[in-house]
Amino acid sequence: MALNFPDSPTLDQIYHDTTSGFAYKWNGAVWQSHNPFNRFSIKKIDDISSSFNGSTQSFALQSQGNSVSISGPELLRVVLGGIVQDAGVDYTANGSSITFTTPPQNGLTFSGVLHGSPVTTETYTDGSITPQKLSAGRPNWNASGDVTVSRDLTVSRDLTVSGDATINSVTVSAGATINGLTYPVSDGSVGEVLLTNGSGSLSFGSVSGYLGSVVDDTTPQLGGNLDLNSKSITGTGSLSITGIVTATDFNTSSDLNLKENIHVIENPLSKVLSISGVTFNWKDGGSESAGVIAQEIEEVLPQLVKNSDDGKTVNYNGLIGLLVEAVKDLTREVEELRGSINK
Image (cartoon, rainbow, N blue to C red; front, side):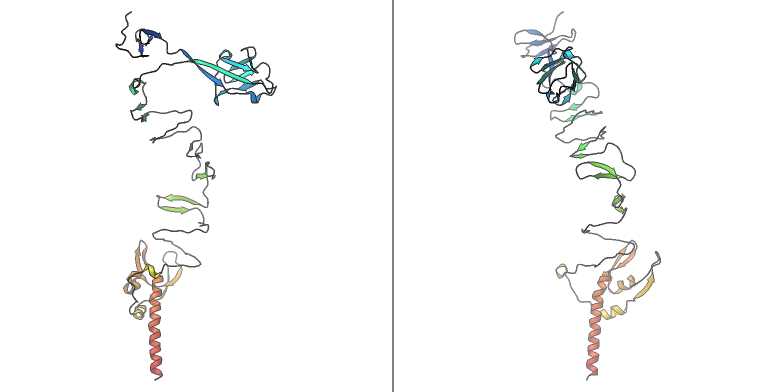
């Protein structure tokens, strides 16, 4: 059988003959038969001597904190108290545990080595493995190190991504921990939201007495009273309430440093005389009230009237300035009358 070896091979280059299935390795002078599966996987068993008590016979075995799989005791070499133990006589091993014929006494030392299945030690040339040489559903990557998986990706241990990760959907069979937050393993009931215990654990729970829902992402609805807990509500915009607002004080910004184009209200008395103070009933609900008519205020001080979806509104604080100046006009008229009477 003629073999078509590559011309000008490099040291340790591997050649696979697809017809025979054999592999050959160039040693710098000749091609030699090469078996890539020429080494065994060897695992050092974690020390279990701290569990020896003179009565326990069976122990779980791990390597670097991970469970091991033992297909037979002959693959496990055990040294107990400096003495090599006889597999099948001094101990048996199967699965991930070992059982001693005689329970080890406290203070005995332990060491163990597990011989596993042969693994390949073949080194492939850089760039020789491409996505196209893998099976269907293979991952794809480029020279920059970007990896794309177009099908499902199952990870049984930790997955660390140092760059960006774009994922259409994620399914986690157990609780997921992301940025220190542990998420619940099952869905909550209707109306429940994610709540934190303050220590990184999230769970579904009721939100009674808190901000319960948001309608169209713009209108929050309360499930109970809103307790500010000695805090404040701040913001820029309007506050519209249908009902009664009760407070100890209502303070309106009036600092001179916040104002410009300041002018004394002209003809305040005539403006007051053109405004009616009325009592009335609200059409919505029929409750009784008293006040002024926005359209009349708009005729004399239009800057105090605004239009809203529910009609016109009046800045009642602005009427105070009008009344102050009207009282001052009346006071001057009274003083003038007193002066004319006393003459």
